[in-house]
Every structure is written in structure tokens, then in C-alpha cells.
Length: 189
Image (cartoon, rainbow, N blue to C red; front, top):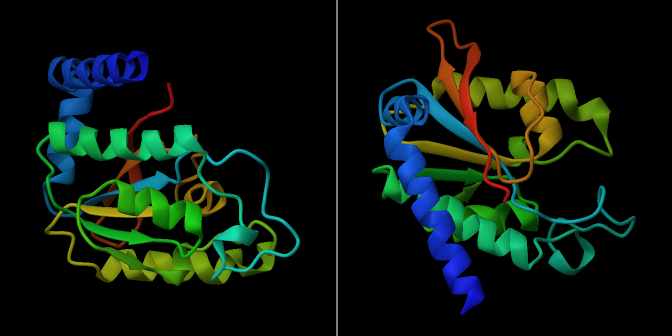
């Protein structure tokens, strides 16, 4: 019962905050217009990096969402719906914690986008992957709300901003293809 009340309270607080806060309302409005998208760092997955036996195709070898991360992912999806985004194009890193976050949003089918994969243990891949995702964003239609679920290092490389777990980063695509952060909404309790 306590968890249900906590969840209802948080949903109500997010709804009231979204309606009453001009800042947040402007971010959601922008997402529904051309040339905007959001980046989301995967929800809470305790730990640091991935184990040495990491295998992208085996979730048992990865750092995964805990119960709070699973709940957080659902709340993020509810936040989108409360702000008028019922469907979106959802793209994700191939890491299980990102795929789980993306799928738990329940905003549309999740497509894997390898350019969103973490390069935390392989920083030599950062220039190539960042260039690749920038090109993808530059050519993406962005007429439908678009969500990219990735990792802290990837989002920082793209935006210069270091997000918390589950944080939503609203981005504007400039005419030359460059990106500018227009705002963010944290989702950790």
C-alpha cells in the first residue's frame, strides 16, 4: 500500500509540476515540434561500469536496472504521457539497462541503435561513435517525438552535460546539425 501511495504521490507531483511550471511546459511543447528530441540516461542501475565478462547479448553479464530503476522507467513513461506524448520513436543502446529503460517507457517499439552504446571502457571509440550519432541526429526526421536512451558518457560527449540516472535531456537540433540543450528534467526521487 505504501509503494502505491508513493507512486501516486510522485505521479501527482510530476503532473502538477508539469502543468504549473512554465519551464517544463515549454520543454514538452518543444519535444512535440520539429528539430527537437530527448536523450535519457538509462534508469538506476547500481554499480560502476560493467563486469570483465561483459557480453552485450547476455544481460546476466551486465549491470542491470534494480527495482528502483524499473519503477523509475515506468514513471518516466508516465511523465511523457502526462505531458501529451503517448507515442514516440524510441531508440536505445544495446546494453540491457538501456533497452529495459526504453521498453518500460511503453511509448512505442524500441529500436537498437549501436551508436548509442557505451564507450566507457573504450574511450578510443568516443570520436567515432559521437560523430556517428551526430550524423544520425542531423538526418533524422524528428517530426515525431524522438527518444534516445543511452549512457552518461555518450550524452556528455554529445552535449557537455553529465546526466543523473533516468534524467531527461531536451535537445534542439540547429539548422547546421549541431545540438543545444534547452533543458532537463531529473527523475530520481
